[in-house]
Image (cartoon, rainbow, N blue to C red; front, side, top):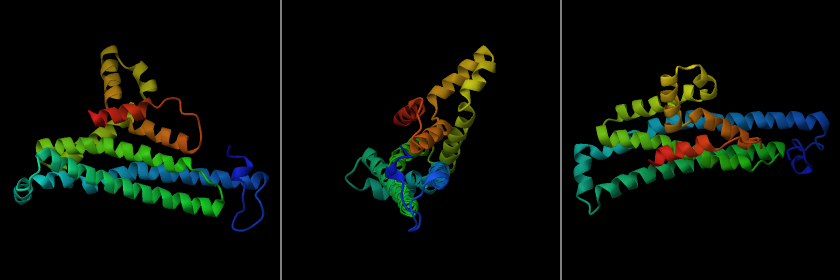
Length: 220
């Protein structure tokens, strides 16, 4: 556990941390880990979507599409290659950020929390889910602006859905059915934020349904 000898070390070359000193340090590390995970989860995904939103629609520009179709590749292969390239680039960036923060915190505090690194997969999975919306709208409309508006709309629409256990009982029967249907269908960004935090801090996760159903939305 967090309080075991495996996590007890020296702070900046000093003596071993005992009693309140260890727990104070542990609290600081937890807060930083939570902030670093929560920050990239929201800001990272929002900025990543903005930065990569035009990469699909650029394929359909007049000069670009003529050059692309002149190659012995199907449109599906071209689009798939572009999307896989975006995924790969973002996975590298997320990995670099999380690994660097983890190393700095670990060497400074001598508290090693490898579970922090496993949250890379969760954050990346949610980016892939939201980018699927961007890709679909881009292919249908050919508009980067519309694709980003719809993607951000889906993302922020999930905010009130995160309080479904409190809001659903007070809604009228008809509205409650629509609300719960939207909850089960749309990505559950706020609830996955809680999963990331609990996983990092070794807390019990009641259910993985918000994350798994969000991945299902992206796959569909």
